[in-house]
Image (tube, rainbow, N blue to C red):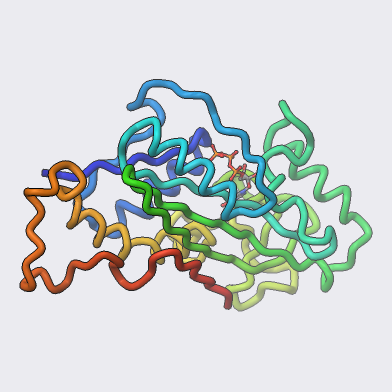
Length: 244
Ligand code: ITT
């Protein structure tokens, strides 16, 4: 039986990235999205941390769907803005404003900041919550800097103004923004790619144990199941930092 995992996000472009990165790992899993479950109210993201908000979204998804649920809370942290927009990235220009308005506001706010001080990083925390209440979080970081003006049509959100560091010419205004990269290039270095790849051993371990949640008597806990334990990959409650 192919196990089901619910991806709890209302952001279509974020969903496309999450699905692509998970698919790439080759795990036998059926991905369900908002369109596959009964509609439910979007939970308020009331926390001041990515981890807190990712858990709010994943808990709500698991409670509603009864499925193992993955949610992502992410954003752009700009040093010259004291780490903002951070957890407020999606609505930086105010409710009802779009990605372009957010990006233009950021550019205006750091208009007078010289290139060498336009350092920033994308951060993503992915929360994995099981219907029986187990919770795991994984963090990925993509360091870089803010370009002087937007470039590129790929990606979403702030991608047209973000120049990832891991390119030979980054930092000299010559490297690609993440909106100029192919999806594969972005996934390989992105905050989301790193967080999801850090999650995969835990997800794989949990999926092997799935039957025990439905019928304890069916659960085969023989010693020969030696690659399956209560804390797959020893990462319960772990936050994994990937900083270059
Ligand atoms: P859900 O909460 O439904 O998942 P959301 O878009 O509201 O969707 P967040 O609260 O996590 O999600 O906000 C993430 C915002 O951070 C996103 O809307 C972008 O503005 C920005 N962001 C995150 N990852 C990004 C990326 O890979 N590229 C560009 N911008 C990104």
